[in-house]
Image 1 (cartoon, chains in turn brown, orange):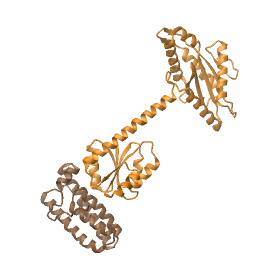
Image 2 (image 1 turned 180 degrees about the horizontal axis):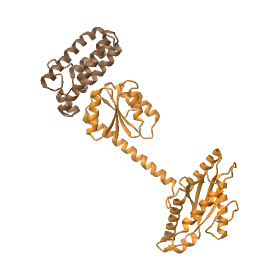
Image 3 (image 1 turned 45 degrees about the vertical axis):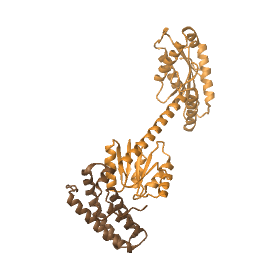
Image 4 (image 1 turned 180 degrees about the vertical axis):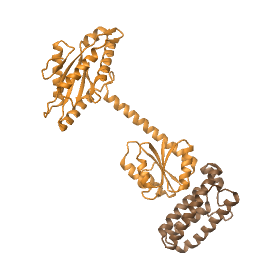
Length: 125
Length: 306
C-alpha cells in the first residue's frame, strides 16, 4: 500500500520515530544530520548536473541513495520527494521530474529552517 | 564475533557501526562490493550485513558467490535493502541470504536478528567441534591415544606413495612389549593398561616430529618413518628401546621392569614396496628379535641386533 505524502505542516524530521527506531539520543541525531547536510549538498550538485544532461540513470542512482539516507533519518518529506524523483527518472518522465525537483528545494529548505530553529545540528560540523 | 557491514550510504553505515559496537560486537566496515567480497572470506567474519545496492558487486551477487564457494565456516548473511516487494525478498533469500530487512531499519529488530544469526553460528560451531571430536575418536586408540590401526596403516600407505614419487625411503618399526601377556596375567589387566599407556607415552616422546606412531593391535605398536633409510631406522629404533627400558613403570602392583623388542624394515631405493610387505618384513624382524632374547632391535636386512 502506498504511503500518503506527509502533510506540509508536519515537522521535516520525525524525531520520536528516529529515536525509537535507531536509538543513540539527540546527540547522535545531530551528528547524523551533519553528515546528511554535507552529503546532500554534494549529491544535489551531481543530481542537477545529471538532470541537465538528461542522464536519467544517474538521476535515479543519486535519488535512490538520498532516499535511503532520508529514510534512515526519518526525514519523511524528503524521502517521499526522492522516491518520486527516482520513479520519474526510472520511467524517463521529465515532466514529473521538474515539479519534484522544485519540491526538493522546498523540502530541504524546510529541513534547514527546522534544524536552525531547534539547534539540532552538531555545532562542530 | 566479527560482523562485516557493507553499506555505501555513510549515514546507514554510521548508524550500523554505532549500534553494533554498542551491542558488544566487533565490526569491519566497507563501502563497496569488491571490498565486501574480500573481507567476507576472512575466517573471523561470521556474520555479514550487506546492502543490496552497492557500487561494483551488489549484495545479492555477493550472496550467490559466497554460497557457491561453500566456505567451511558458515557466514550468516543479513541483506538490507529498500526493495520491499515480495519478489525482491524471495530473490534475496534464494540468492543465499539468511535474513532480509527492509530499510529504514528498526535497530531493536536488527539486534534481535543478529542474535538469531549468532545462535545459528554457535550451533554450527558446536556441530563442527563435535564432528572434529568424532573424527579424532575414530582415528585414535582410546587407551594409548596413539593413532589406531586403520589410521597408521593409512599413513604408511600415504608415505609409500609420496616416497615413490619423490624417490625417497620409508621405514617401519614394529614394536612389541616383552612378556606383556605374562605381566597381564600376573599383575592384572589394569596394570597391563598402565604399562601400555606409559610405553606409548615414552615412544611418542622419542620419535621425530614428523614420524607417525600407532597401536597396531594388542601390545604391538607401529612407527612409520618418512624419509628414513635402514641405518637411521635402526638408530631411531634403538633410541626407542632405551627410552622404554630406562626407568621402571609405576603400577598399582609396584614398579615393573618393562622392555620392548623392535623389528625394522625399509624400502629400497628405486624399488616399490607395499604397506603389507613392509609390515610383514618388520614383523619377521621382530619375531627374530624375540627369538634372539628380546630387548633388542633387528632389521629385516639380517643385520646384527643392536
